[in-house]
Amino acid sequence: MSSATTSHASTIAQLLHDTTADLSWQREFYEDLHRNPELSHEEERTASRIRERLEALDCEIIGGIGGHGMVAVFRNGEGPTVLVRADFDALPIAEASGAAYASTNGNMHACGHDMHATGLLGACSILDAERDAWSGTFLALFQPAEETSDGAKLMIADDLVGRVPKPDICLGQHIMPGPVGQVQSAAGPVLAGCDSIRITINGRSAHASMPHKSIDATYIAAMIVVRLQGIVGREVAPSDFFVISVGELHSGDKNNIIPDSATLVLNTRYYDPAIAERVYASLKRVVEAECTASGSPLPPTFEFYAHGEVTDNDLAAHEAVREVFDATFGEDSVTGEPNTASEDFSYLPQAWGVPYYYWFVGSTSADQLDNPPVNHQADFLPEYEPTAHAATRAAAAAALTYLAH
Image (cartoon, rainbow, N blue to C red; front, side, top):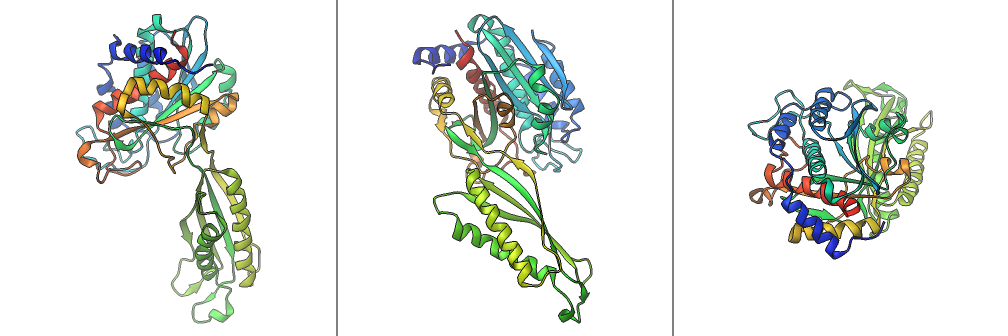
């Protein structure tokens, strides 16, 4: 696939400006999803609402992939095959946005997945209405369970690769804090890799009045917490990026008993997997040394889980799609900074062995830019109209980069 020419990009931009697609349903659909959020693996109603919209279009719907996942296949003659993905699960957060359509069920679309689904369905409407302008196969993949980092893996395990046409490229987007309607794109790493690590430290219990009879697992854990930041500060070059956060520290359940074990749960973020491997070797060395120094009766144990791949955009895809973004969004098409959040999107293109491209859409109203609400917080709420407009057209523009005549 070659890069879009300037005239090609301008043609796509004009098509999106003049499209006759009916998008009048989007706001009601978005507010309905926002009002009725469903957690990962429980998205039955959400998937049903997405299917209802797809059934109004000329496409084949392949549902029940890895739970509530589905793919809409739009066939339009010979040409490349392009996949665009949107996730649609919510979070266990009580909403405090103050919106008239706020959720009241204790869960919340605090990461914008309702907007992702709305935007991709809008792009489906545009491509369905503008079939004379493109040829090939358009795949709209709706993924459940992104928040638990296993939705993409479950779809792949359920023979996603064998059930839908192989794409030539995979595309995705995410709404983020930032000037509303701004489309932020870049080549290379744009989202961090991540891991969670559960460390169990073994000691010997004793009464709090007899600390000399104990091997204090709480004390060992505290020393480890302090030493972990020394790994990043002294073993990772200042020009590189690595974060270790201690999310949980559990030790004991009675004020006058020194416990016999402690558990640390860590989370890491990085852009270079090779640096992560070096840090993990150092982390094990430090933890084992602290346990040995305190006389732990058993070595510590390490459990690595909730791995997320680095989202590392293909350069050729960036050059092609960015030209169309620039033509479509003008000054609102900007170069984005790498984000330290993580995603499971990249497992999808990896399953097929194809390149991918992922970008961000700003969602913050002008009056909130000084202190914008952020994803995964109870007050996160995109400004609807410009966010939906940009998310819909960005998804369509990226797909048409490869599909348009």
